[in-house]
Length: 212
Image 1 (tube, rainbow, N blue to C red):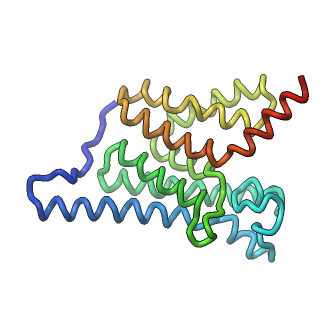
Image 2 (tube, one colour):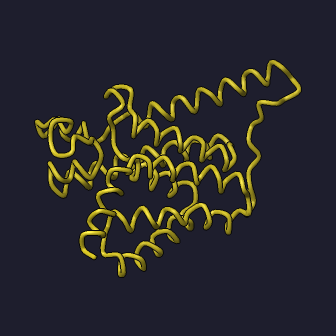
């Protein structure tokens, strides 16, 4: 698959180099701040609810669905997914390469999980990851969905199956791009999301052990 050439900070022209580096840092900062916009909090505000004080205290789609119902989940998930798609799509339009696009995705996911405006209490990052991957490469996301459907038949757990399915994404990206940088940066994206879900993963493992 043909890869773009990213604007480089290592340009021989020092003035141009400085401008490019500044634009790169500004884009990454904006990506983080976009991630800090919590759709769940907006949806909850119009419903007269503070998600931080209800359910799990999380501002992501899952807790929004738990507190506000199915429509709360859907609106929050779509809104948070748009954040990831917006950042990655913006990087594509500005001519940044795939490696930088995934760096920007790390920033928006980090903003979603650790939003500075909410004392670093945000969501879990899945929705923003899905939106970012949709903009990054639809085929890659489709392959993950197919793996999810197959695994769900055996695992019978929506959350656990979703997380396991995303573990395949770095390997699938390598099949598409044959680029180790893309592999490891996407792996870092997945790692951040897994870290945000560490308590959920522990609970799922304990439940599995009890059922044995």
